[in-house]
Image (cartoon, rainbow, N blue to C red; front, top):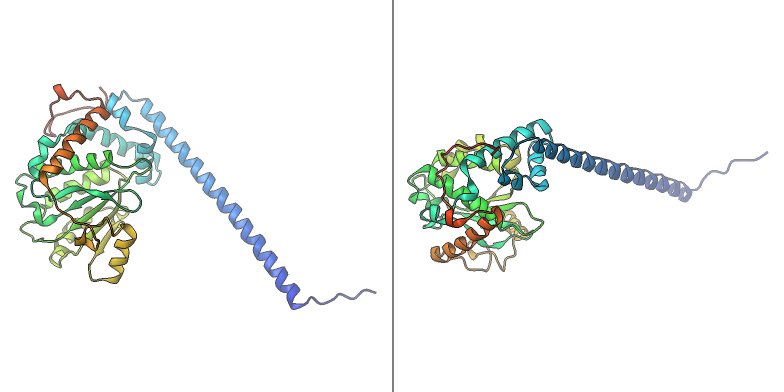
Length: 311
């Protein structure tokens, strides 16, 4: 007759460790399968959206706009709902056909940039995103809301043009120095900008930094926050120069050697309108080349002319 030997504590621990390791391996395999399957579904969604685009009589510009990366951004913005993504993309194509953002030139909006209220900074964040610096306290030179909106669209197109290869998003840094309700961006302009950003530049915004906003900004923010979708809201960060967490956040986003001293870095920031104008004129040539536009016969519209997706 054989007697069963009681397992020692070490043997029991080894059995338990083996079971844990087996379970962990099974979880890794299952997760890997889930991730791969999910990515396959996304690839299929992109293909279906591309096939849908192929059924439309689109202009050459619209076709050039609808890259695979572009289609993925629209799908991502609508949580990979194909029907909603189709509608969103069609709305954008019609908007671009009417507003013609690729035809706006620096000469059309240069007067809006004289105060340096919004400009593309000469730096990228740690992951290579283009940085737009915005100064709400310097918006007093905008007399017509549509001019402010047009300037914003121009800079969005320019920021996208200057994204490094492999990077699709940008960073916004809002500097509240000199902010007051008198100099603030008009509510209508803010509402239009939020709408255009969310609906026609999906998944282009990586992070937004509200740098040292005063309490009075809270009233303005409450007026516009209802127009901000939850996905965009998650990208908003309120940063204060004497706050430890804020300093750590800025250091995680930027190289302090390149970050202007106004925001906790070591670099110097000075907006030179003439120099910025020179850079924008150079980029206008790049924009024309990218879209295949003839600058000699080029004429910009004011955003009011009609247009169709198909042409």
